[in-house]
Length: 321
Image (tube, rainbow, N blue to C red; front, side, top):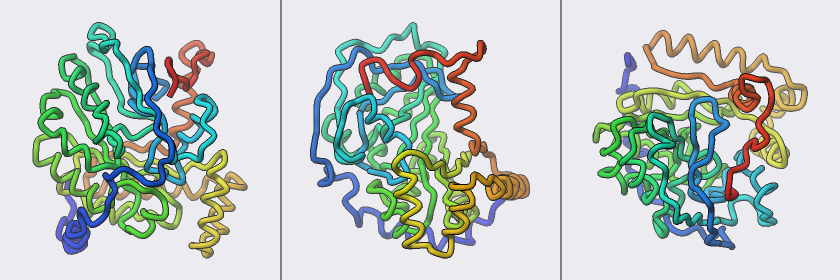
């Protein structure tokens, strides 16, 4: 990757010096309800376009990201609590099927962070990965938590593994407004450490906030230890649409008109221009990347299947999410 890694090296060192200055991996005081639930199987068929199966070891996520699409899961789980204030810990006695997953791709996780703070206490993700390490399958893990570093030795056993760390800002204040996950400094440290231990790293630049996320800055902060970038735009729907638009109006009033144009009028021009800028930048600097700006469309097409009909199971998993 042909990027000047010294341009923002001072910024990275400053960020890095703040590692462990927060308590993100401690049990979250915002969580008021913890349940242990029995499920039939950890593994469910994936509706995502790039994986065959998905595993969500927990229901809910204490990171409490304000923009989290996974809050829709409350429709299926019966939770009345606010998203980010409950966690169900999945318990399953059934071993993961070697035959079912052999030669397949597995994603952890689609509607939770499998390394959320409660993983430190319950270790469900580690139990699952210990089983997957014995199966010839490709595994992708996405997380915002530095708890994943606990399992480096286990992760090194996987011949086909990718770890994607989500970062959409270098501004810790904005990050703290949006989620309770590990700091940006910690997430960069995760990428660097995993890279140094021979684990394939991806920076999932998501969600990109119009007028706020500076994708160039993030790439330049992380290029020395990131093998690929995934770009995804901010999608707003459901209850959190109002939450985000109200936040923008209060904290970034100069962007109110832009957000109204995108999310109320449905004008896609900003995303078309942003996609073109990303392609031009990545081409100029030889940045390996994938653009998921039309992720929702891809998911819908995957769910319809080759026959054009949507499977009855939809997003819902066997045993509940």
